[in-house]
Length: 416
Length: 94
Ligand SMILES: Cc1cc2nc3c(=O)[nH]c(=O)nc-3n(C[C@H](O)[C@H](O)[C@H](O)COP(=O)(O)OP(=O)(O)OC[C@H]3O[C@@H](n4cnc5c(N)ncnc54)[C@H](O)[C@@H]3O)c2cc1C
Image (cartoon, rainbow over all chains, first blue to last red; front, side, top):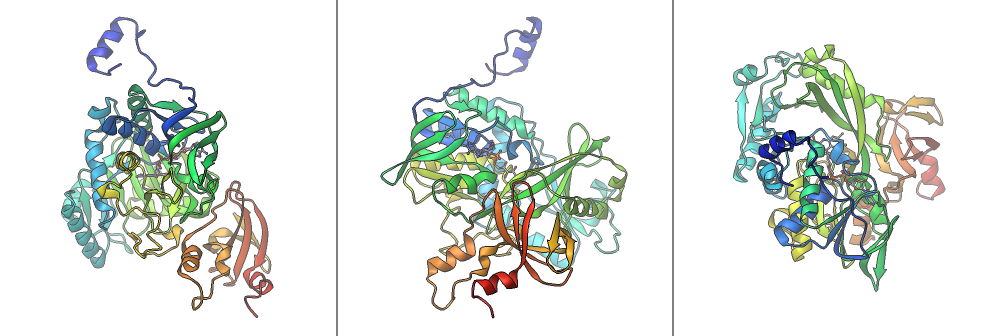
């Protein structure tokens, strides 16, 4: 069923009895052309683009829990394309372009809200670095502007411009950045893929791979064996666990990242704001809550919950740039599993095992990547060639000496 | 998290810097190791869900390196050793 104003009107007059479920509750078939492991944002987007762009519909997505139970339903929903390096920026700009047309494309209200993202500048060298970054962004066709103090003051009068230690000197602004309703992204992609014939199978955990003569020919699951020509793993924070079943070690550690929401407040934060001298970022949800976060906890974790030192650190960061938030009460907080890679950049690649593909290493920034990740993974699965914007996301890049290290931190995942 | 330091007793984990998997102690000899060995050492991790042996550096304390065995699913700390003792037992230090 197509969602439209006309349909809301019609259903309203007929007792809302005609709405159908957004996707079928599929039972697994014995075999498929492609099985996607993991029904998070990236897995569902991959299924959608396989069906829509490449006409491949004999596809299943197997998800161990329910759609939205992973990071796609846990993140702080920021989208942006403000990267520096050549291996990353064109990919993230493709993603932002896909976000811009997404709701019309999959006929679902994902509340894509391009309210802009501000990265604050606190020192002269930081301004130089951000000018360079802005130039790199513009080279990829993205938008970027450096704001001076006065312009920033008009937008955000509440910032602590005179902070003794980290005075605010300005910001780099990407007006096309913003936020998206995260779980609606999963539902929209699921509905769009399902409508084209893809089976979405929930409560079905992959427990092993079907190997045949050294090639991967399907998956073992809690709902039986499912055979497939190609198996596409896309499990974010569980990457290490799942690829271990294929005997692979990855350049990835799983860490926990926490997020926080305050009580509902009147509109005050215009878009997304990030602190440039510590790790703190904030936006305001449509319900009025301040949605904010900061650093990962910094140690390996599969617990989906973090500890108090980071809570303190994040709140200190918030107080340093906008002391007014000290009066807001914290309503809730939670954690999610981060697939932290050795250079802070992701992988979309074939593995050395024929028939087995891997997508992961998204760290804390994979939500914004959802459309492009799905698009590029679908491209790889359908054509066996990487999409041009994802050509550097290879598993062997460390062996070849070409990491994509935005922060220049080296092989220390908790520093990215 | 509270880490029971073998010398100093219970200490707040926030006093420590986390370095990662304790297999980093077993660095291959840079002069003789193959490219693959060095690559695997520097970049690949087991990343288990469950028992994990890992390095914690007591930067805000006595500056010792510890090997902490911890459950990554619950954050429960199961064992703490001085990294020095672990390295010695493995014949890596005098
Ligand atoms: C607190 C927090 C804040 C964040 N903020 C942002 C942000 O502001 N902007 C941004 O760009 N990114 C952000 N991220 C990162 C982003 O959410 C992730 O990088 C991204 O969602 C990962 O891709 P995914 O949606 O496919 O993952 P997931 O939704 O985690 O999907 C993986 C799925 O695989 C399933 N799975 C695992 N093992 C198996 C198995 N054996 N069999 C079957 N299924 C399995 C899981 O159940 C899960 O549903 C944030 C993350 C967190 C936790």
